[in-house]
Length: 251
Image 1 (cartoon, rainbow, N blue to C red):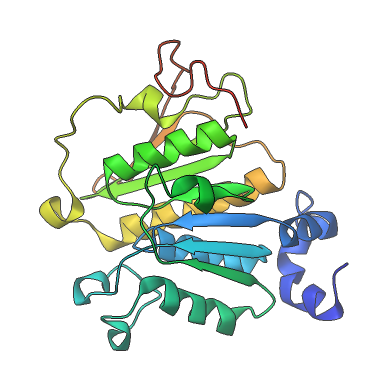
Image 2 (cartoon, one colour):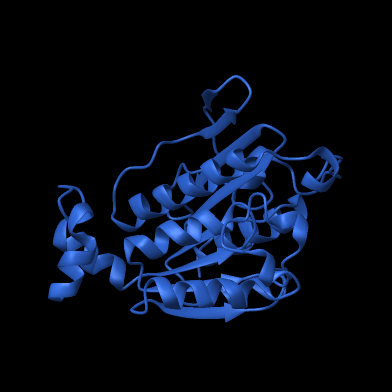
């Protein structure tokens, strides 16, 4: 049940007919895992906390560096050298003390992901490298966890919703073969525009909220060109030969 303070705090979103009191009560019971607390994870975390998600599990093994500050909005210069998960947890506790915060200072790998995803209702992939992205995708498909995958580099952003419980929902490996060697550049090599990363992370939070509320989410792969200020949506079919989801079953 929502308290008087909850009604005051969440009143604007409670007015939405697709949200309402029932939806808010639903969100307070959900656990979302955010993997990566960089340019994508920072705005995603802030808006999920603002929405009143009951439990947020933060996963990142990195520390704050000076080069993070232009786009990673949770951190100030005084946080340089500190663990990102610790600084983010402190922000969460100040912003919304009613939210439960779980901290995991570790890398997301094939061996650690089963534990990191345990008890999760939904996962956000806010990481910045293809190897980790594939590992998260495979673990979510195996565990039957909905996944909102975001990426940004240069002036380009990308979003994909993966729903293992939906028969025709493709996974990230349907788009990018995990067995092929990647030659894509990293943000450290190609650069990135901070507002593009922030926009993608914010929309990851929006898609996560829609999924948790049981609303329809837009299908396909969504790409944003920050230079041209254009969105494109590409149809993405489930691959019958996908090495991850073609014959997957959920635990």
